Length: 412
Image (cartoon, rainbow, N blue to C red):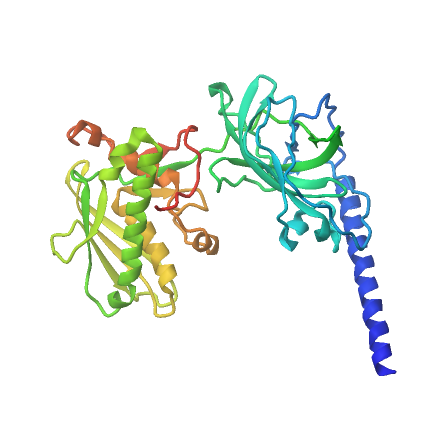
């Protein structure tokens, strides 16, 4: 009897969960439709049309609630299938993959607690987007969609192609600012997969605004440069230093690796491959790093520079404040930041960047050297192609050109 009651209770709980999940989705959909009264722009084809920003910087997109799915559904075979995107130039190599996860399912506009059974992954790898007289290159895109309802959420990565467009790319992601972790401007919008004559088309809602200034990426410098390319670094002896020497070695290796990678990716700055950070025991080291437990409950760094000429560094002292409770990974992040200063970089106002002045929890998760940081070093050592720093003026602020996407550079 007790087992029977438990079984009935379990079934009742499951049914309630299904009803609540469906109700939540319905309420979200209705709330979205009430919140956004913007009429949907008319489209004449299945080309790319993107949503615009509202006054708070969030996209104004019409929410379409898909037809509810049956509780039990076995998805069809997710074999490779070609997609054709029209009206924006032909997009090539667009395929449907079979990968899915409950995380992907959570992104689906279907939103039901059983919709994971029907999730597919849409991958867009190449193409062009034309909006008015402005042309953008679709670098890649990835999203999830429901293989039965054909609704989903697609993220397309766009890079400006023509020079006249570089100041205009609306921030269309559902945040105040877009993310550029893949090196281009991630623009997310709603897509409905429409199947016509065996070909899937992307039907998107909205229009691309051309009044929002493209986000720029800038970083300050310390106003100086080194007159040689091998920068020697010494970790001063202390009780703490023994615990964190490995973090310093790792940070040095990361800088050396990413300098080489950037130099190989952007031939105009191939001279960066000549710059090497090198650990030494010599008291004549260019950069000295010392660890202190000042503050106990905070971690940070301080860089002191001295010049032998107006624009040439003589030596740099880096002080890293740590406490016993900080892990090697945290110290690594701080040291990586301070070595950026040792190369002549200042700070940036990009919160996700290594050279942001405040170490955040997000920064710890995404710590890495960006193209902005490396381009800044390239400008600091811009004298190298000429062979001498004499008369070379280090810019106080460096702005990443639009031809170089903002992204974290992985070491080799």
